[in-house]
Amino acid sequence: MTQAGVPDEIKAMIGTTTEPAIMEVERGAIRRFADAIDDPNPLYRDVEYARNSKYGEIICPIGFFGWPLKGGGLEQMMNTLMPVMMKAGLFRILDGGIEYEYFLPVRAGDILTSYGKIADIREREGKSGKMLFMILEQTYWNQNSDKVAIARSTIIAR
Amino acid sequence: MAKKQIYYEDVEVGSELTPVAKVATTQMLVKWAGASGDFNPLHFDDHFAATQGTGGTIVHGALKRSWLGHLASSFAGDEGFVKKFSCQYRGMDLPRKMASMFGPEEGETWWCKGKVTNKRVEDDRHIVECEIWVENGKGERTTPGSATVILPSKKAKK
Image (tube, helix red, strand yellow):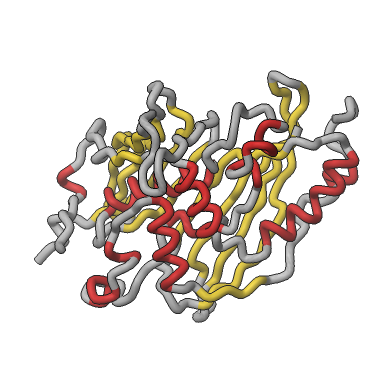
């Protein structure tokens, strides 16, 4: 990391948005997700149970956004950021955490559109020197053009 | 199989969420990689992990996030709605190795826990704020976070 702070080349990327990505929410993907995290909730795997619930269909677990529903946005944003960070001497990339806001339930069969945005890039002094905190924001819309969720990931580079 | 629904009137500030136990294994990490699409070798390749100074392959932050998603959505129940959710990946956790194809070696168990920090009614919505976290076998909170859950109210029931 340079002494001068956030390199201009990186700062200039704040506000950059990605191309929209379209993805189908699949029952199988939801079941595999629930299996992988050891969550027995029947709303994620039992079609009959889900039909009789207020949702009427298998629903998306709340952790489904970001990974696996990257929506292309996250990868696109990382692909844009990585070369610039490498150039600035930032080789260690860590996932710092995530913040979600949900607006509507997402059901299997929904077709989501997601856009990514580099919402913010800040510098902080860490124990081992300077660190960059990047906030990558993804917004998800369903096939009725209703906003269903926002995911804000914090990526730390040092 | 009917699940028990918790109502707004059932919880008070300080109420504990029913804890959820998780055992991270190398096998679970591979299942998560497949289900989430996160193929960073730091989570499954010992040789690569040795170059990263982590002391071995480590549990994905996003997997611990999804464990907490299990905790929060179990608390919300079928009638509740998780409105906001966040967590930070503060500490690394090493998964248990597999002792056989089906079972892990002896080792630590992770607990997803939570506590109600605030409750209020806003625009007819019964909102409960929770502090949530993943606690490892050493009692360390490696993944602290928060959840805002809208619960059904007994008063709204006919």
